[in-house]
Image (cartoon, rainbow, N blue to C red; front, side, top):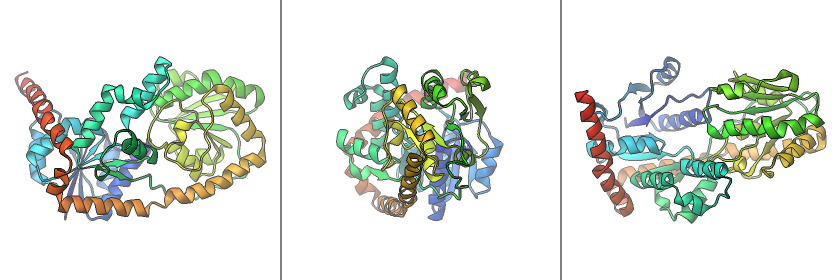
Length: 405
């Protein structure tokens, strides 16, 4: 049986984050291929999420940064494949994998292109237009692309990001695998227009684009909507909401902050409109996919619709967003048009067999011809060489310092 080691800085929270759900999708994909999976994390123990993994037959392990105990861990299991959960983890552990197990395939799960999201966030903060040149200029972009070149295969979740990588950066296609979300069609309550009420926004509070979106809703969008829809309430849900967001809870103004939703699908299915007024972000947005699967019309900015064909975004100014919310809420015909559209989009979202098959083929070919695959990636060889000369010795210095302290 082939061994896979997943290395992460977090426990996958399937009940709180889209990233957690995504990790479980990848885990199921590898289980279906017969891999024995080991989940290794630097995060503090979380018994609930550890047990959830154990119940799937996955062994969990605590690992340390800047410690040769990780090398011993790798030697114990000698996995054929290692998957890094985001580029920072590859920076921390990639060189150790290359040195300890040089014939192990290294996969980077990008989740989303972090440099894309961060560069948009910086542009928004600086009130400057974002473009690809601005993106290219950021240090985080160079770091992330370097990490991707060092990897044998990179999992990309968004078709837009695939296009950016191939067209803007001319990134080698043989190092990329487009693997979109593989959602399951939900048996939602299928409530009618008249049976639904209110607005909903769901987003993890640790994610900066979500916090910004709640600020945007509270300070600019909701005051306009409230004047037109006086009896309507806006419900905010999300795990790990900061106190600044919790303080927005004002029932008299119809702005309700609930914290983590026990069942996101149920909450969205009961709402008349789902909201995704994102100023910045990357990847594919779980809240938007939930809206589609629950057939709940979703008011989205262009950032929120990335990677999902068929959705019509609106402008990012508060007035345009508020106007669209009011129109959809009041007009049953427009609302039903959106619901009907979502039926066809949902069928496309769940039809991912082709991409899964392609990923499996790519991985098997890389495993079979690893030396040849790497020989065509000379830039990756250069970045691996530099990582071994810089990251490695800096980590060794920290390791030695920790031993003496």
